[in-house]
Each structure stands twice: as C-alpha cells, then as structure tokens.
Length: 147
Image (cartoon, rainbow, N blue to C red; front, side, top):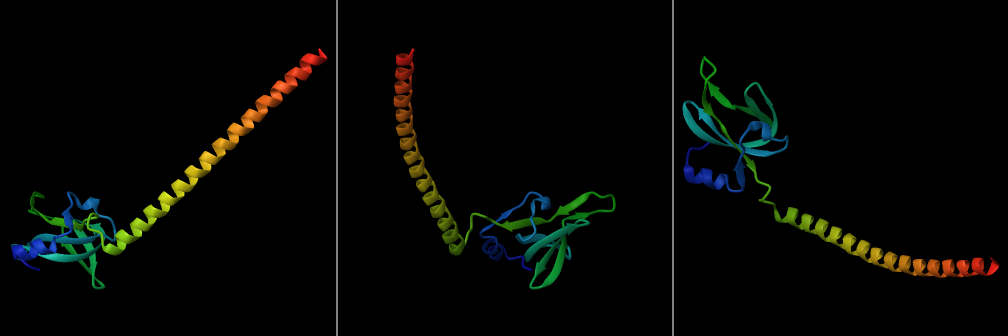
C-alpha cells in the first residue's frame, strides 16, 4: 500500500485501467487504487479470481484478498469507485515475443508450402484439361466417321 505518486507511476508501467470490473478475466494480474481509512491508496494487488457483492477477489502469494468496487452511502449513492488496472497485452515478455514469433514463422511456412502445392495442382489440372480436350476431339472424330 502506498500513496507516493512516483512509486505508483512505476508500478503501473505496463498496466492499463479497465472501465468496468466486469471486463476482468480470471487470471488477470491486477493492481488497484481504493479508499482505506479515509485515504486513497494504491495496492499492488494480485491475480484476479472472481467478483461478489461489490467486491473483487484476488489471490496474492497464496492468500485470497478483496477490495470494494464502490464505496456507497446509506442511500446507495456511489461515493467512490475504486480504480482497477490490468497488465496490458502490449507489454509482452521477450519469452512471449519469441513464442509468438515462432508461431508466426510456422504459419508463414505453412502458407508458403500450401501456395506452392496450389500452383503445382493448377499446372496438373491445366495439363489434364488439355488431355481431356484432345480425347473429346478424337471421340467426336470417331463418332463423325461412324455416322
């Protein structure tokens, strides 16, 4: 828990704010800003697990923790909404990038092989069509001679 702006900026590097807690997916790495003891504080969070009764439940180092999504008054009016940040997809590790690059290279290789096979099949089909035309002409001549 911290209120130091520079520390919060460092912690949120690679994270993006979500508009709604309903956008969260189990397994997302989350960090959040909420009210604690009347002060707005930043928490490093953990791994999102589920939601329930105006709370977000997350797991951090094997422990389940939760925080309120909205702080409400007696009438149900929202006094404060917690801000939730999720690890951005744009910030991929080098291991992830290597894995994605391998997948892309493999798919490109498959596309090239299939393109080559299509070209070869097109050539074979053209040759077979030419032979069929010759056979049709021969058959027409034989039918014309018999008539």
